[in-house]
Image 1: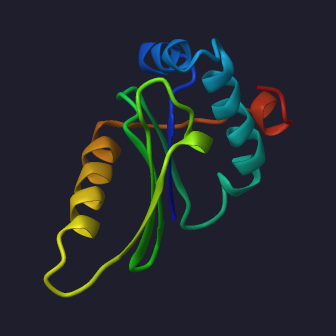
Image 2 (image 1 turned 135 degrees about the horizontal axis):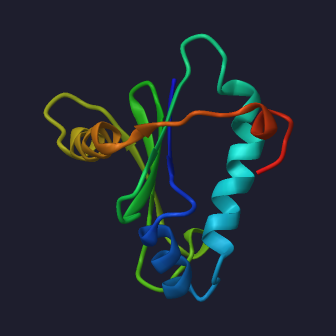
Length: 122
């Protein structure tokens, strides 16, 4: 399992919050997600990275199925469409979005969680 989260303190996340009109809301949501996911960070087979890229979409992969929450300028994820894609022979969209994920994954940095963060403080 690979988890790739925006760095809550990076410029791209700050800009996204400003564009959505939520201020620090985007950073807070990432930190909240990290707190929920923290118990899984040390589980065998789980890799976690953060990235500083522009957030164009959120991708959730389940084997040969993807949910892609597209992000429109000025709109939050709950107001934006979700595409449900399946990998099919000859299809291109599934691989298109996975190639995008892989590029961001390669640019990301491994997240190191210290003992304070493990205790639930962010």
